[in-house]
Length: 178
Length: 148
Image (cartoon, rainbow over all chains, first blue to last red):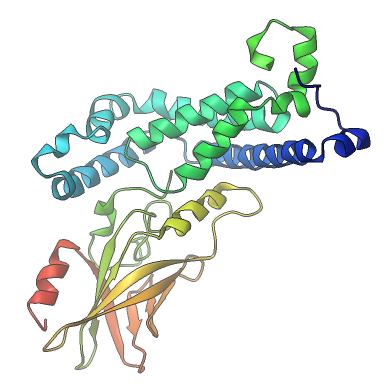
């Protein structure tokens, strides 16, 4: 079992590669914190969680998918995932979807920033990205975002820097602070 | 992902004071995966030109991650590939890179400039004209059919 990470000159001298890796992961986590909080604030500004704004966004995307999907997928375009996802899930439930997206972005962003519930925040971020892709909101920006969320989800960065370390000592059996 | 929104908003009538700027969605910019076309007509005689704006390139799409980061924010301008089709007797197509200013509401493409608010067009050789959004489905017919 590897020794716990510590912020010390000795730790750097003993395993400089690990030390720099930890710093890199924490830099990624900080970037993701800013990204998620920024995106969450943007959704709060646009009233995603309490207006019909998101319904319009989804309807526009659905119309676009149907228009372009007919060219892309031929007669089978209706079999694509995004169209039924929007039509039967996202549009009828646009308000709870807007609430969930806003809440996940704000809470995951705060989790990244504070190092609290960090791994779970990483998985929540991945869940969000997967749903963006399923809903037809995909472009190349999802690749680095998914990679960074996965990195946070699988590394104990909250133990390196953040409140997870403190709460894991107080509640050693709780999965939230691993 | 604010970048990927319906193309339908773009398929509107020519810009008026109340309309959003040309090639803008409800978030203020043409989305990364959207394609759109402008038809620009000279005020006097001259060659009509159609500009087909394509999806952002792979790196450009990835860079939009920075748009939401506080203190970095959306860029003041963006670039995307464009095809300029001069609708003369024998239409010619040229690939170029368009530069869309989000702050000054202008587009620079192949030496020409387009005002995103008024649709005013100034060609590379100084001629004036007006641009309006057209349905991208009409582009193939336009270029195949020769001059306007």
